[in-house]
Image 1: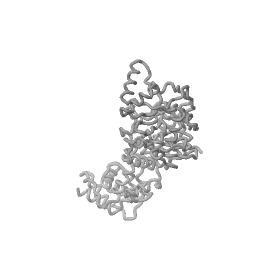
Image 2: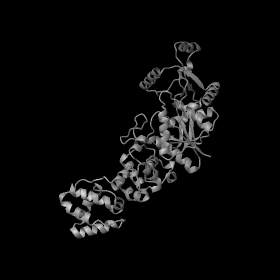
Image 3: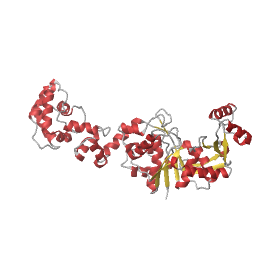
Image 4: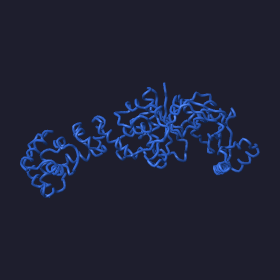
Length: 449
């Protein structure tokens, strides 16, 4: 069985770019009948916050995704220790004592000299005496994995054949001087232990993949298949980050953007498949083809996303929105939803139209003096209950015959008096929800001013 995973670090709110990685993995697992795991990379003790863990779970639930399992790296330290000891026993790890400031100076010097800013393995040349001296000064080592050298190749699910010379990379730090492990190492141990068969992630991890394939080999583990998708950027071309909060899923949710629209947009943008509304995640998974992803970054256009959200909302059946409408105090069932949905930019507006239709205290602004005679006649000619969709045509026909008002001169004053808005749902269908008593009060108040 295929196994995919999403491994976010709970150091901030997930953004649209994170959603792309999340959805590509979750949808592929759904289509293949495989497993989808949530693995929280929470080993960065200084930056991880529990509120972000909860927020990640909320974001997945909002998008309609339920992982088949969840794990936290902070609870898997015994596995990392065992793998660390194995690599250490095989001579693949070595302690290094440079501070971050010293490493930064070395990188700058290398660039200034026209050399690549690679770690020069200076720690391997330290004598036991020098190591003891550094530790006596209070320095604690971080640990690096010694790359095997040579070239590493793999068939990438998006980019095709990839080949990287390990000699062009620095030996990665896999353990900090405080004893905590880094992503490049823990991810390999976890993928091997959990039986992950496929990893889809951003193209900024391509170099990491070469390092991790060397780690898989050193641990005697079978690596997953890798695929590296193009990244999303802001409209200005800037990269997205959890620290900046740009295009955070929580913000999009608060602004009323539909979850299904976010899912479709994050999945289809930057691909040969046109961005369009979908009926559900199953349909979206059928449209996904990693081979059709562009190699260029994709810029997020919020106007395009909002338009997609509106189209998605208008197409949603009542069953899909019923719990949300009920929570917002919107009644009327499927009949009311069918009346208003085509005029909504976000679902929250349905509550406003329900109040307009059913609030006994609602009063529109005073009518213009020229419109008052038409509204007075409209009040006198109000049909008796019960009202249905045919009522509007019969009523306005009678008013037109009595006043001579036609077209906009007839319909606009009535709309303003009944709803207080110049535009909105079709009045023939909304009028039965307003009803005769409320309609009469509103017409009288509009005339009286």
